[in-house]
Image (tube, rainbow, N blue to C red; front, side):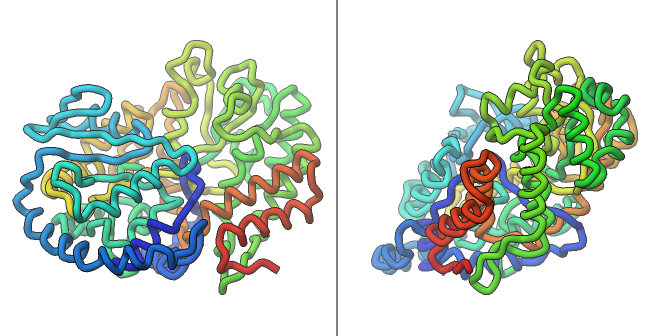
Amino acid sequence: MKRKLLGVLLSTTMVAGMIAGCGGNSSAPATSEPAAEESTAAEEPAAEEPAEEPAAEETAEEPAAEEAAEETTEEVAADEGKVLNIYAWNEEFKSRLTDHYKGYEEVDATHGKIGDVDVVWNITPSDDNAYQNNLDETLLKQADAAADDKIDIFLVEADYALKYVDTDFTMPMADLGITDADLADQYTYTQSIVTDSNGKLKGSSWQACSAGLIYNREAAKEVLGTDDPDEVQAAVADWDKYVETAKKAEEAGYTMCSVNDTYRTYSNNVSGKWVQDGKLVIDDNLMNWVNDSKELVDAKAENTYDLWGDDWAKGKTPDGKIFCYFGPAWFFNFCLDADADGTIANQGGWGYCVGPQSYFWGGTWICAATGTDNAGLVKDIILTMTTDKDVLKEIAQKDADCVNSKTVLAELASDDSGNLDLLGGQNPYAQLAEGAEKVDLSNLSAYDQGCNEEFQNAAKNYFEGNATLDEALDMFKKAVVEKYPEVTAD
């Protein structure tokens, strides 16, 4: 196992997206199938360097690493660590811990205190895969690191969680003393993502990231004559109706959104995995996205702006003339600039509906690193931040987040406690909870991040008239085969 996991971390090169995801329809059980696929795929794919190159190093390090893991099991019980090292790619988890974990004291931007334990935040942005590269390099040194230098907690996203949970670098929740009963109120899909090929749960999240369509209320009034969520939902209830509404929006002087906003809604509702029996498969629903998007771009009803770019962000203000964005609850808090004067969110001008198809996007999972000498504290942090109902309700109300508790979401949906100012007082939690029940991870695979990114890159050339459809698809296939040499494309 150690040989495999070193190969995974040393050879896997994924271009990191800001937020991860895939989803669709709820009946999928919490199986270990995605992690099992990663076991076979990750030894070879996503490799810019052959997986065989690290073999000598793996062979030399393997016995020491395994002995260290065994010794750590005994040391962990003592919980003697004086430094808690947390690895993340942004400030999100830090802000949650600072605001909601009793006993946490902030020292400065990268340090805190919990009792007599120093908390050290190692935050590396995801740009150019920097976070994963830094995490991988440090995890490979974990067995031989001094106690105060060992990683105790690290965060992962859905798109690359499989890379880590099926290795010995992540501790099973059961080894921390966290039971199935502790996690019983969570949504099934949030556990499936971090379950390894042996059925062991390797992480926990405070979020349930079902997503929908976030619409500009003033635009809806102009285009549809109403901003009522049920009426807007009727106008975008499927992709044919969405296309009709997008063209009406263009006639009224609005752009519906970027083609990249809708991508995950289509990609989360595919009928199969990207790679099947070693062959690249482009799902029909992805081609639906290409065809629908091309029609709307040509009609000037959608644009091709990259997510998070300056042009894309102009839709946060009324002058941006954007009808909608697509996103989950974290989008409310992190992407709409509700605290900035002049934004639509600041004026309570957004509404929320499910949109053409249910889907999910993103989420952050807390993993315990094997070798931690703060297992007791790590356990308490995970239980507090992902299972304590009072804390989760605080997170939902303070941070406009959709939390990973069926009970809390039901409470929020039942009264005014779930109303959000940036949505004009609308309560979105009934729709968000329903969406979380429908997430289907049966098509999750280790190829998702790379294939999704390359597909969008190639499609953009087609949308902007720089390539024919066949040329764009050829570009995509070539890029995938270069990234994953074991995959074939016809």
